[in-house]
Length: 515
Image 1: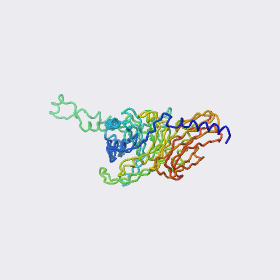
Image 2: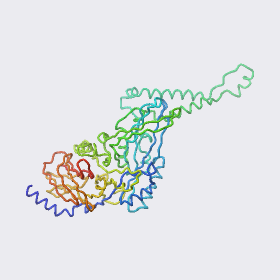
Image 3: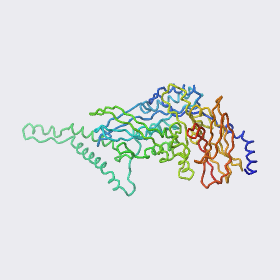
Image 4: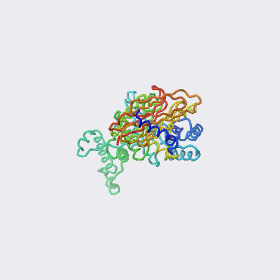
C-alpha cells in the first residue's frame, strides 16, 4: 500500500470514533415488518400484536394486513353483472377508517414503540379453465406487495387492483381509433347491442293501446290512449345497469379473463404508490403457493385450484418500487450476490433506472406458538428522528440492513461507510459518495451481543464481486482499501454476514461515483 494511503488511513482511524454511526445523529431502530392481525386472517388482534412487539423489544412494528381478499368470476358476456365471488377477511371488509384509527390509537398507548399502518396489496389475479369443465384455476392471488407510508385514508381506499378497480382502461392512441376498435371489436359489438336493446326497451315502456273494433273500445278511447309495460321497464332497468357497469365504455386495461397480463398491473400499483408518496416492497417474491378450495357456484358445486408461481421476475420487469423482502423468501435468486437485485442495482448505476432497489427483512407474522419468532427477521433502520416520518425517510433512503435467524438478530452493525481518503468525506448505507479518483476506503464495525457468539464470515462485495472476507466472533473493526481505478459509471458496496450459502445479515448498498 502506498505511503500516503497509509498516512491518510491512519488519520481516518483516529477520526473513526467521531464518524461511527452512533455519532451520525441517527437512531438505530429495530423494526418488524409485515404483521397480519385478525383483521385479515392472523391469530392475534391489533392490540395483542402491539403487546407482543413491545415485549420483544421492537422499536418499530409495521402492520400490513391484506387490503382486499375478494375475487370474482363473471359469466360471459355479463362478466360485470352476473358473477360469483370468494371473499376472505381483509382491511376493506373490516373498514379502512376503523383499521387506521385502531393502529393510531395503539401507537399512542405504546409510546416506546412506533406502530405504522400498512397493507399487503393483492393487485392482480386471473382465471384459467372453466367451471363448466370442473377445471377452474385461480392464478397469482398470492402475488403480494407491502404498501405503507400514506398520510390519507383515501390513499388506502383507492389502491388499484382487480378487486377495487382503478387499474385503468384501454384507450386509443392518437390517429389509431379504427385500429383500436378493430382490436376490441367483440367488446364494442356487445356494448352496441346492449345500447340498441336498451333504446328499444326504453321506448317500449309506454305504448299506444291497440285499437279494438267494438263499442266498448270506442267508449274508452278518450279515457286511455296509452299503456305501461312492466316487462319493458324491467328490461330497460337491467340493460341500463349493465351499461352503467361498463362506463366509460372502454375495455379494462387489465382483467382476470385474458390470461397472465405480465407486469403491467403491478406497475400500475407502483406508480399509484409513488404518486401518493408511499413506500412499496415486493413481499415473499420467491414463494409459490398451491391449494384446493371448495366453492359453491350457482348451478355447479365444485372446488377450484388456487395457484401462484414464484415471481422473482417482477423484480427486474418493474420500475420505481422501493424494494423487496430479502429474508426469508427472497434470497435464492433475488438477493444473493449476482442475483436479480444486482441486475437492478447495475441498471441504476448505468442510468437505466431512476431509483435504486432496497432490501428489507420480512416477518410475515400471522400465527406462531413461539412468539420469539417476532425477532427471527429484523430490519434495522438508521433514522434521523424517532417517529413515523423518520422511519419513512430512512426506508426511502435505503439506510438499513436486514437480519434473519437469532444469530443475525444478535449482530449489530455499528458502522458501514465508504471514505474518500483524499478529502475524508464519507457516505453511509444508502448514500452516494462522489470523488475524483481511487482509492476508496471501506470501514466496517460490528459487534455481537451473544455471550459466546459463533464465528461469522463477513463479506464485502463490490457490485456482484466478492472483494474481501473477514472472520468475526465477538466484534469486528476493519478497514478495506479498494485501489482499483474508478470506472465512469457508479459502483456500489454491500456487506453480507454468515455463510456463502446461508446469509444472516445483508446491508443495502453504498454508491460511489466519479466526478
